[in-house]
Length: 291
Ligand code: C2E
Ligand code: MG
Ligand code: MG
Ligand code: MG
View 1 (cartoon, rainbow, N blue to C red):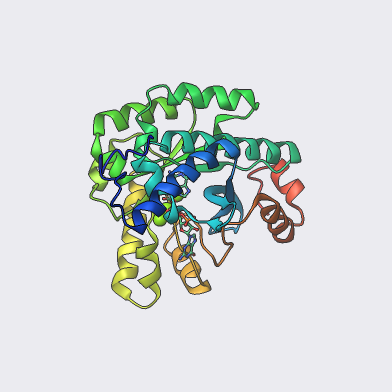
View 2 (tube, protein in one colour; view 1 turned 90 degrees about the vertical axis):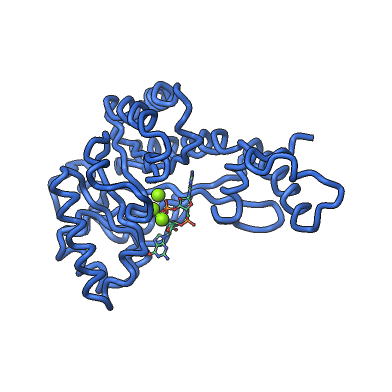
């Protein structure tokens, strides 16, 4: 019975396990099954250019359509996937689904770049850049169709390896974003030397901004610093018009948040896009021409 967790080792399977342990074990078995049975689904949330309102891409966020427990969110199963060694498999499934969707959007005439979240354990795979290149090629997608989101923790854990993997992705034209920026311990000085394109300011900096001038000052100076390093800034967790307006005023390039759209299934995203940009066909054909 392969229920051994990488982190907790031998604890997982014991006859004295409490109900929590039993649940965990069952979930692990179900998760393994979910990968094989295609129970993972992706929801998509737009990345909006704040100055114009244009949709610049989408982030793919994984959910598990559980046969009995309903739709489960990442906090219910990602940690388990990580601890039990299922993460590389999960990432592969997510990546394939995200690129399939990017290919559908391209065929529909609304090409959108899809950002995929990578955990550290998924990025240690040396063959990842080649595998990604092959997956793009198989779908006739340009490398700009994919964006990779990594966390500061990964970047800090093994700097040399992070640098190597990210630069091999980036020379192929895949853009890299640092997720949840500000929550880890990386400094801008360190980030300067990394092959990255974008910082995603963590939501915990965005929410207090409208009430607290010092929080706002922190955000606006971080935007300036990011720009001075040649990086674009995306703000997470924009929940109201005030936050949107303040970030736009600070020159923050892009934003994501419930105020614009929650993460939704692809079909709902298409409806949202059509309502927002009735001219989206034309808009996307002359990408960058503005509206
Ligand atoms: P993240 O990559 O930082 O994604 C942003 C999270 O914030 C998402 O939660 C999103 O639904 C949520 N969010 C977006 N806008 C707002 C807002 O305005 N207000 C609030 N309160 N929340 C907002 P979600 O989907 O539950 O994902 C949580 C985390 O799970 C992600 O954080 C990411 O670290 C991880 N994750 C999600 N999908 C994947 C995946 O496919 N692979 C890996 N490795 N990690 C994933
Ligand atoms: Mg992310
Ligand atoms: Mg994030
Ligand atoms: Mg986050």
